[in-house]
Length: 518
Image (tube, rainbow, N blue to C red; front, side, top):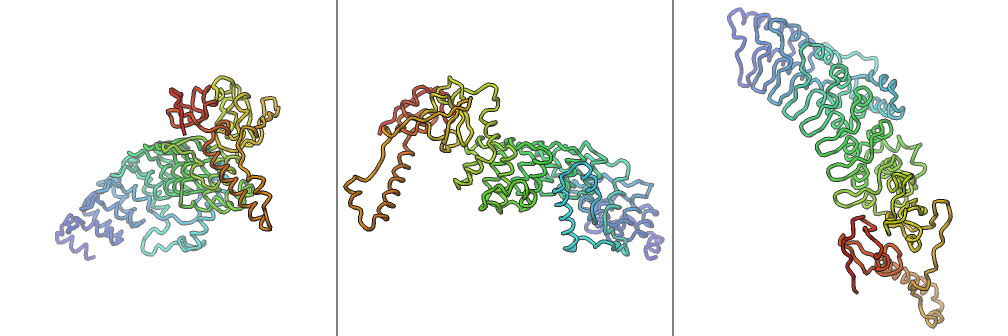
């Protein structure tokens, strides 16, 4: 009534305060739908913006006022402009991503019908149950309180705004986010689902830095949104940003185990893609100091963990790394720091477990084409047809492998060598050429009642001497001292270096051999 009286006495509808707000802005701030209708009927500018660029529609969407939104959208003369952008470049549609949506999201049934793994669906349902129990959602059977016209559950408000004609879904804010980017960033599954239905073309659209909606969902750990983008939006699972990072790189880097498993197990995301630093996802998980979330302990409990050494079964990063290796993550790829994934592992026992975890994957990495054998890495002439146990590498021919005690690629001790027809190759006796360090017999005969202690000291000394010898020994024959260096920095003994044309370690062509003198 007061507003009517003021209007009847010629009050200025477009009078602004210090912040640029008009009477219509105030009616929206105060949640006064009847007042909004009255002001509009008297000719108030529905598209008027304040000093922050906010229109009346921005205000009611941000405050989630359903009835006020209906009054604004129903006005015909003039029609409201839903594409107005504030000083940050956000439209009202960008702001809708902040709208609260309560209750069990119906999209779970759709995901189930699309074939999403049951363990992922169960995890999503558990997350929703947790939200109920912590009071973030109204309990089942209770109806939202609409006494003040506020939209407690935002689905109706979202549907109302999305039904407006002439919406420009392609508008980006000043940070480069379109509306689907913003929904993925905020983790709003309902808005994401509706936008996929209305503008499927936005699913793989990128920001200026190359981030897609899938990148944003994986980076921020929004499992349900990630599911929707992949299953309903058919997002490209290996889409790269400007730093050549895939969604899998980001999920691994942030420790979002459930999303990593979803991408790799359900959607066959490649574990071999390199980012701009040359890192694979396996590099990232093994170099992380911060632990990933422990959802992988549940999701992989029956498949992988029972086979692991007991000491590592409750460490999420190790479980996740083992999962990636089982899914053919490469062990023999170096990043720009010249490091293999296993170079970040200090525990030798764990390193050997990773190497032996998926032997077939290692063979594929060393011998991608089994029908045409690669040349021996030593002589570079004969085919590398000798299989080493237990590492399963085939890198050497029969002649060059005879004196090898350790695999050049993975540095594991060689227990046995087999030809292509399964014949065991016996190594020659090397006792005559290899130095042994024992105490003189006279000293040994003087062992007294403290003989056990002396024997232990002797064994320790022998071990240390052996380690020193191994550190100076040729990495090919493990017998003679390293006395030849290549320009790449690697070394070998003169006998083994003589037939080499390419370095046995880095595979660079050998242009010069330098004799070393001690």
